[in-house]
Length: 155
Image (tube, rainbow, N blue to C red; front, side, top):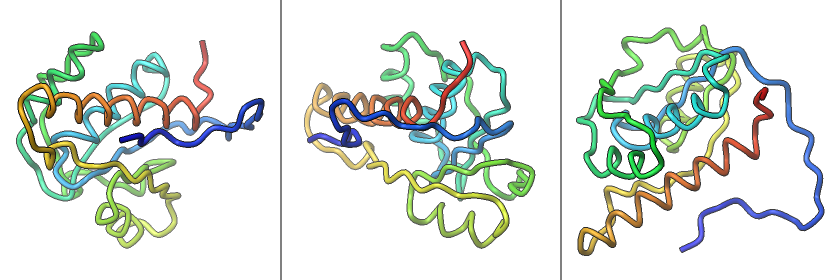
């Protein structure tokens, strides 16, 4: 399964100006958006404000923690939060990782730009532990590629 965005050989992409704040949004703030927040924090070296939330608060997924630990990132202290706890209109950009979160973000803050990055839910994967972990790795890597392709973070 390949979920990385397509790239054309030799293509030069102009990256838009870096927002001052980004909210990564998914359904439960338990897998995808915590991964995205940690990956974006690493790339921007904490020079911009990055947060994550879900439509509801789920429990942090241990496979998510393990996949990020493989990439030397610790998200084990993540506490899920919902849109009820955040004023999303204060963010310069919302990146929705699910259709449901995209629709809710547009409804709650119609003036805030919302980008939709379709991201599979690895918790839906089946198989043995190694197969499930591979699903989480693919999602982690997919999000990292999307972040690198979308933003030109300062060195």
